[in-house]
Length: 497
Image (cartoon, rainbow, N blue to C red):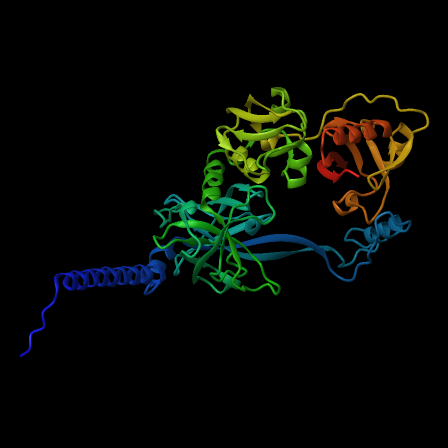
């Protein structure tokens, strides 16, 4: 047998190659294991379904609706024949001169939904739209557990959440809330409910996205592809530990059926609302008392801001913020120690703050930051209408002029009356606008009122032109206008010509 000698250098090289190969093999095994763990799905949802289903309920609501029998003429309100037809119908009602069977009758309208028990003493969570306007609410329990009548403890239309209560002579199975904030896109979830009135049903899917906003100021929806259909409303969305991380509320669908885009209000929102409804029978959200809008890139340029973070204040009606000295054109940078990046975030953190709490609000005003201390009011009690203020007399012959593609007119009492504006309206009215102008492109329309330019009030054409010149002299490429429509203010940045 021939033995081949190996030099020390060759041995070192072979040893190094072997070591590197071992490390790579271990890395591949580890990566394969991690990859398999990330992609693995539950072998079955049966144990989870069996665990949580006893706490999920079907909800049947009924509403009594009055209706007349027979054919009834449609009577347009304000019609000159309205009184005639009313007298005719009254005479033909029971007890009238020509009494007949054409009498008001009642029918019972029913609707179905889902819910879940959150305590052994019978508190139940569902959607507000499931029970809204119901005269009678019946709760059906899982697997032949019987029915019980429920009463409404409290509702919150803003988040579409309602809390009900049933009385039972024995402890009820219940589920608890989990932490929706730690759910990740791709996590498994399971929905349980009463789709299309078919009884208890389970569907599974994943978290498709988080922090979805539909139409409400306090929206924080989990999007899921777990099948959610009519009748699932108010039912729970579970994580794999059997905790409720959302309340199934809505679907996005062109045909009314599930296409894999469902939305469940996150438990982070629901739990806070439920706690308040149980304690007070109503919600109690913090109220700052400002009207705000997001800061766009062009608004930031027009105001000389370094970023678009914060919430731009467009109006300050009577309320906590006005009492503390906040002014229109201020930018809220932080609230109670939390940085504000958008108006939506500000609305959320203010709404979550306790009523009556004194908070520190950092604002940016004319390039300088200030900290104000504000005692929050209650949003539900707020009257956001601006207080009346005396108006100044306008010239007898209001001037008109064309600026930045807008034909503007100065306001007087006659013009305010003609346009249906309040006596307190100040600024320049948009009489006409070029449809190919930037102002039109950004949503300004005839009838709008330009109240400010360059963060200063403008009540005349000369004042507006002076503000434009000031902006140009200051090196600005655009000017910031405060535009009001139906007393709703917003800022619009227009490029200087």
